[in-house]
Every structure is written in structure tokens, then in C-alpha cells.
Length: 292
Image 1: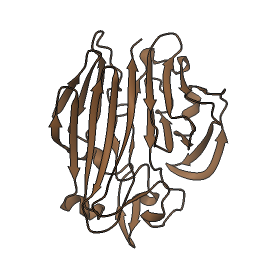
Image 2: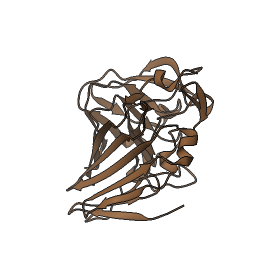
Image 3: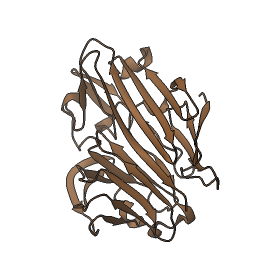
Image 4: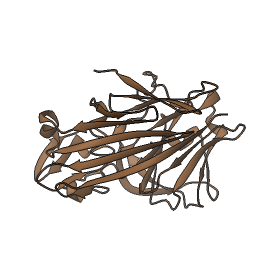
């Protein structure tokens, strides 16, 4: 697969993006060279920040029904494993595009253009996703993000997530990647969620409809922080591999995995959006990086 990458620069950050999956693979402090992004150790988790399209999460039996026909689709969709075309490049911006093809139409029968744009301003990186329906019928889709961030010194207990507002921390539980319909209240205080290994023994933490429009990953004994502004994304996933402390993913989603036993049409799936022919829609989130 193509391994071409591109660099964005500001006075504060150096950002590297791959054409493979339009994936963000590196964010470094321009002064200290400190790396914020997880570096895809294949022994632990071999991705950096995959882009999720046209679904988010796992499907029941890895199948999705569209207009009465079943299609095979792996977890999080196919965009993360496709080569995007760079169509606009500057020192502080890159826009990449994935278009439907004969190959994609066999697994997802909609004609589309999917754009991912990275814009760097000082220590803030904006990531925008735009979907255009270029077909003749209504298109159903979802999208999301899955960025993984390195944890300096690899001590999960030294980290917490601060939310904009006080939240009722109720996680929606998964079984083999599918939602069970059960929830569990978490032991957290106001707008702070302390992190620990034990939180991820039951897979990802998934919240629905948070009141907060931003959250911040902070280390308690340093100035290290990563703030994510995610207004417009109704679901938030927080995930790492159980038993390790080297990285954590903060994942704003429009959609989520199937529930156990779901066999309905894509149009009935939770978190799916509809786009009429020739229509387009955009979503963005911001990452604000502060080195320790």
C-alpha cells in the first residue's frame, strides 16, 4: 500500500498525515520534539488515528443490510484501509479525498465523495470530514474518529479526563464489540473521570449525549494536556487495550456499533445519517496540544 505522508507546520507543532486512510500519524511539539500520537506498535495496536467511514463500530456478523441485501463490512468501515488522494496542500492545511469505486460499490452501494481536511493553527489541529452524495438515491452512512494518544511515563493512574460540564457518567456496555442494552454507572466526581486499567476490562467506555462540548486529557503532575472540542458528535468512546498504560483513544462518533441481535436495515441502525442526492454535510473536531 502507498506510504506517502505529508507534513503541516506551525510555530508550535509538526503534524504528519498519511495518504493511507487519511490517517493522522504524528503530532510533535516543534520545540521539544515531544510526540503526542501513539506510534502504532504492532505488538499492542497497529494504528495511530483511523478515520471511521461509512460505519462506526462492529456489525452483527460483520454484515449490514442495505435495501434488503446483505453486504460484508468489517469493523469501523473500509475508509481506514483505503488510499486517499491529496487534492489541496499548504503549509498549514491538507485536504484528502476518497471517492466511491467499483470496489467500494460491491460492499457499500452508494456513490460518494468523502473528504478529510487537516488545518493547523498554532497548537490547534482541526479535523473536518465532509460527505457528498453524488449518486441518484438517498445515502445512509455514519462516521467517526479514533485517535490514539501516547501517555508519557505510561502510568494510567496519573491521568484523568476533565469534561466541560458535570456529567452523569453512565457507560453503555459491550459484549464482543456489540451493545448489550445494559448500562453501568461509573465512580466519577462531577466533571472529572480518573483513569485506571480496570476501566477497560469491559472494553471501551461509551457515553451517549454528553452535555459537555469538550474534554481534556491531563496528566496530574505536569502541564501535559490534549483538549478535544467535539460539538456535534453525540457519542464518545474512550478506549485502550486492557492491561497496558502506553496510550489512550478519545473517539468522537456520529454512530455506534450494532446491538446484539440487530439485523435491520442500515436506515434503522442507531447513529446513521441520511443524505439526499447531491447534498453534502460536514463535521469537525479540534485537538489542542500542550506539552508537559
